Length: 312
Image (cartoon, rainbow, N blue to C red):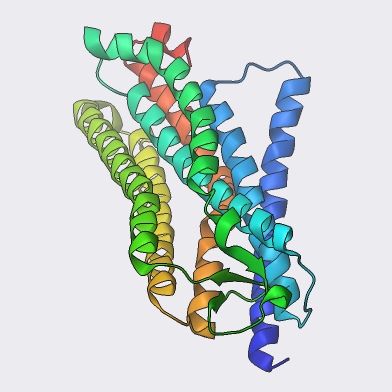
């Protein structure tokens, strides 16, 4: 076991422990709300699914990768590898789709008050909740291929027909078929990124316009930022974090898939980057995310749409 393996193992261990603790603290927060009888909004339900997906992605990748980095060998069977890789992909996909739905939901909340938008606001919670459950089902179906090609390293008779991922291996198959499958998995990711950028840009634009209209109210205030400015900064932080981590993750995943024999650096870098957003997102939500909901409620209340707020 080399020093680089130890360093990678420490990174995986720290990322997993910190991420799971952060997501667990948020999950505990919602348990307290549930047992105290507090009303849970549909956005809170999205966050609950995001927490579960983040934890699943971190545990299914971080724990075995840490064990492999610290020199443990042959601790997984074929079925273990298939389940670990499939569940990690499911958690990663649901985490992405949950974040996308959360952004869309927030954009709908603070949208303009014409008749068409009001009707959409009334129906959005039901549609969004259905979408979050559908995301689990679709993600499971899209990752069925992991049950076909993933195998334990100890079961490999030769090293020429497999890609080494540390604690598991993937049997090489037809490049054309694999390229098509990679494109199939990449398309939902790209769509989610596009929808989130659109929704977040819409929120920033609406809040900016409202800030301009309300400038005469804020111009005599102290140096404190207006609610709209704080909400805008929070949205930009969440969007930039999401886009940066998942764009890097997709780039490394594509490189790893394209290489006949992925290097040690590419494999570990891809796995570490894939765990960054699930590990960091609970802390972003705890430090800034809750303020988004609160500030949006303030904006809605000031705009005189209390009837809409009652449906959140």
